[in-house]
Amino acid sequence: MTQDELKQAVGEAAVQLILPKLEEESIIGVGTGSTANCFIDALAKHKHLFDGTVASSEASAQRLRDHGIAVYDLNSVDMLEFYIDGADEVNHKLEMIKGGGAALTREKIVAAVARHFVCIADASKLVETMGAFPLPVEVIPMARSHVAREIVKLGGDPVYRNGVVTDNGGHILDVHNLSITAATELESKINQITGVITNGLFALRPADTLLLGTSEGVKTLTAK
Image (cartoon, rainbow, N blue to C red; front, side, top):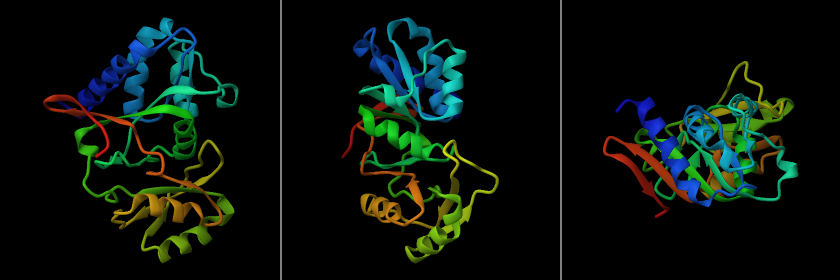
């Protein structure tokens, strides 16, 4: 199967996972990126079964609206039963690096509200040790250089993602040359740097379930 076919398979698998638990008033958290887009497209066939969604980016919100699916502001929602999103890297603890699409802050907020976080990814994203994919860090623009200097002290090599402004008005530093063996500790350390909005480690709030697209079909993994 091609990578696109694997993404479509896990998107459909996520829909089948949540369908039995959807009710008329259900609101679903929806992530950002190419794999999340496959989930959105598969979910659209069942839009009559639930109330609406909360999106982690303007791009996802627009795709949902284009399908005729309601999109709510998270401030008007008490709880999300599910949040479905992809990952740039995920380990066997279901800790992730996210933010390749620059939506990490809103993704982290929506994940925090959801009872059940379902990560959908193709097999290439599952790794033993995270860090080969550069770790995104969203920063207040005026703090970019300060944050970069502090990250160097932690052993990373930050590179400014030129020309990218997030939905929150932030800038992105992509941190290279990390071997992340203590993800929760590193997530906390980076977030404590003044000027950081958040970083793309999802370790303090990892996924609950990983739907992994493989050549043998979609596998369901839980944290080890």
